[in-house]
Length: 50
Image 1 (cartoon, rainbow, N blue to C red):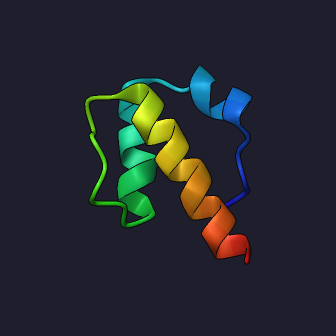
Image 2 (cartoon, rainbow, N blue to C red):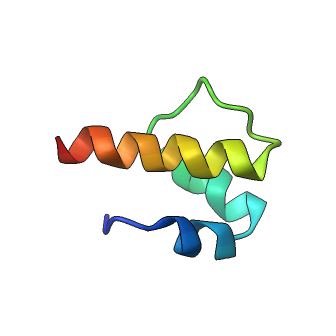
Image 3 (cartoon, rainbow, N blue to C red):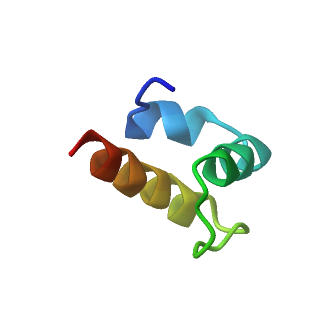
């Protein structure tokens, strides 16, 4: 999966973000908050890159 930046993530719909978060096995995130999903995905991408 290519890394997405904050602009790319914010352009996605809430449903797209939820699907992406689930594909990354993120479970401890508020799936009803677009902002929280964006930052959780960014955090996970940073961890995977390390």
